[in-house]
Image (cartoon, rainbow, N blue to C red; front, side, top):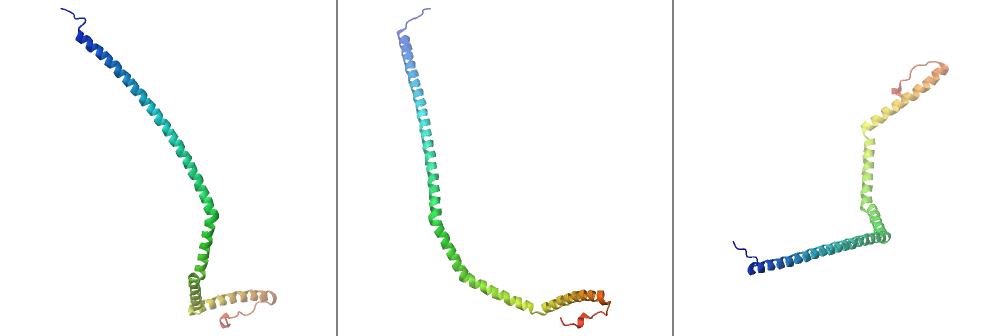
Length: 159
């Protein structure tokens, strides 16, 4: 068996392989560094945009607060005065007329109810009960001073 220690083709391919491997490793290392740098730039940009967004949000909040204060101090009182004026005109106009008509109708119904036979009977019964109580109190006073007397028939009295 013969060993070929230095075959020129094998030696050339081996040297080329070593060279290509070193070049590929260098290229891969450079790519890793570029990727790491790109990630760091992206993280920096993200932080920068988040900070800018936070500032703009704060400015928006301040602007909204200023707008609300200006609205509350200038436009809102005018709107409220206009609403109150409209409400007063409505209350004096159509609503007032409607309420007046309802009050008149309510009064008519009350008069009608007070004049009904049932209402008259009820009032008469109430007055008769009051008369009995008053008469009983006076009879007790009279009996205390002069003694007992004949009972009074309240049905003959005018109530």
